[in-house]
Length: 130
Image (spheres, rainbow, N blue to C red):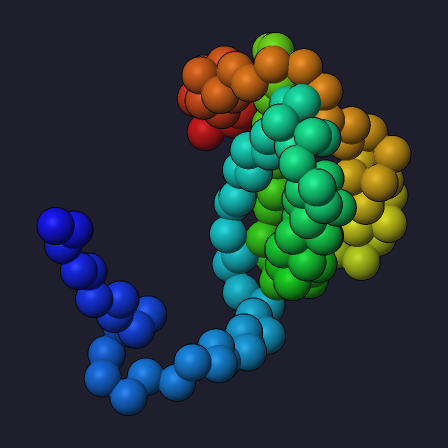
């Protein structure tokens, strides 16, 4: 005889929590954050329907949200080996979005190859400025 399993509703963080997330507030210009993004550029991203576009969209939204806040971003990408396409922390401004961040993701992010996430963490630890 098979056991019956009750299907519970989706879990929530707190009772009566809204199901629609609140929009993210704009960040005020301040001292800024140093953010090192590690992007999977492996073939599994390329072979999963819509994943390449989703990574590009998420990257663009994230760095765009940091524009003119004093924040700096560096990028490590990985497939068979890791590389540092933005190999130092660059302050995110409207100008660097146009000259550095958006050209990188639109023209140089091309998923293919194996998945060597360990090399990405090594690159992040040893090759980015501290």
